[in-house]
Length: 206
Image 1 (cartoon, rainbow, N blue to C red):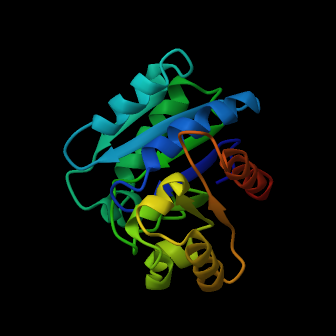
Image 2: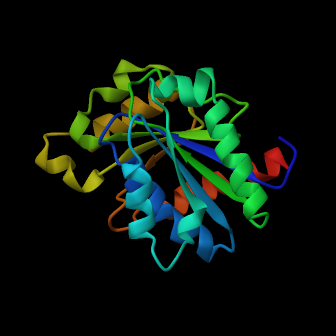
Image 3: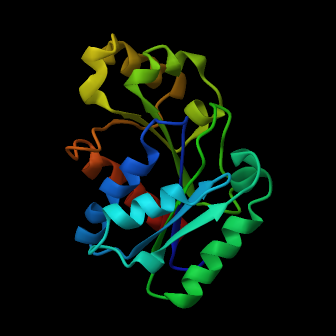
């Protein structure tokens, strides 16, 4: 991809906090002078898109949040045949040529979900502590091959019997040096690091 737009994917199991992470990240990007837009993926509804518009009202133009109804497995829409997402992105950029960051949220899925390089320049995979400290040990391409692994909801680890130190150490081990970031999307903890890693790819793709 050779234009000025950085395209970033967010994947992860249902309930891991992908939508909340994007909602928390958008203000950080805007504070950094970026002009983001969001494309969500749901199988049958536009619930995530409505949620993002509602929570970012007054900060992000609602027209810059688009919901794609995939009608099929999330893998298909962002990895195997991303035609619908490519079309949604192209339409957004035609309407708003000032956009410089497109955030694609996948529908929730399992640990094998990845993004097509035709669709995004980089992607984050989001786990949360409620899924259990064992999750990184399960590996899967989402965990091992994503550009950045996010361990979200670190504030509830103590309540769900998750040893955060073990989960982080296992994540570091299976990812062999690729970035791992701990976040709390409600308080903003870790969001600056997420933004820094995202921005580090902008120069690579320019």
